[in-house]
Image (cartoon, rainbow, N blue to C red; front, side):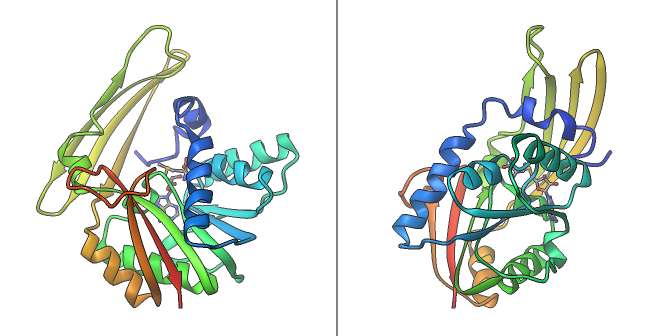
Length: 243
Ligand SMILES: C[S@@+](CC[C@H](N)C(=O)[O-])C[C@H]1O[C@@H](n2cnc3c(N)ncnc32)[C@H](O)[C@@H]1O
């Protein structure tokens, strides 16, 4: 049961209540706090491209990539339907080689947690660095171990009027900091399943990977605020600048 395969055509329905607008606004806020004004930016693990579209409409030159061909199919179809020119690639963050550089890279919605080994995470950070121009920024969010401990993935919506019904059950191993989430979805009389795996990369691992990748000025925030992360932050946004 692959992840982001069967769900891809239904992903935007499932995420209908996600405040992507304010996430794009938060990205712009972080850029202004860091006194950055990138033009050419890359959405890493862009999914169906909702944030990429919002930032394109706001005037940025956005490109995106994702491991899932099914998600990229959706992103391309959406952009084409709206007349937006957003280059999209199917690519793996851990071995990224797009043959071009950007002024900024961002990655939202715990996408880098889906890289479930420390080696993979470290090489994804290094590949982001290889796609940035000097002084370029990398801004991304991560779920924390606290989020997994708090069973944030245990969710269900079986209301008859829901456009898509779902039941998710996570199983977290504190030693490996890996969570496996069994997901069942129902839509239009069809049932389908996915298994999602995430790793809670520790703050120390993240900072070391960034430093080893050539990043400086690393800052972190309790997501969607300008406050420092708290013990009980379930999501953290990291900002780093390439030397
Ligand atoms: C929770 S979704 C978020 C998608 C999008 N960023 C959003 O905000 O809706 C996580 C995405 O990460 C992608 N992903 C997971 N591992 C990846 C990898 N190694 N390289 C590229 N994309 C990856 C998945 O295919 C999926 O589209």
